[in-house]
Image (cartoon, rainbow, N blue to C red):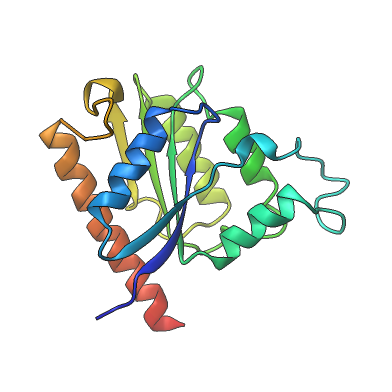
Length: 183
């Protein structure tokens, strides 16, 4: 029996009662026997990325974010699409890690949940490929029209979405276990 994997889940929004936070909670419930999912709620507290202080002087909220990423066995990103792109707060957070490498070869599951989501999803996949997350092309799910597929209580009500989520979570667990066997 494998121990629970420690996962840092990042919602791509700072909205307090977002659908994405509800979706992360639903993922945590579905995988509670194998994953210990911590919701990261600090995107809004990260300063704008500044390459002049990226390495030596990054402290406070940036250092805390990087440390949470380092301590995690894997990462889940559940994000909306804004204006056919990646939300600025999410891109800003990732920019803080490009030089320090916390995402490098880290099993990362991307869920884009939006009205459409196709454009933001493709942009986010490209970002995650560039920073070399582990097996991102397998570990992804696009959920269009998310608000019709999850209720206000955070329960996924659409069977097709629920099945797809269970399948991608199963793949994610396989990758997490493969990584821990190699270390």
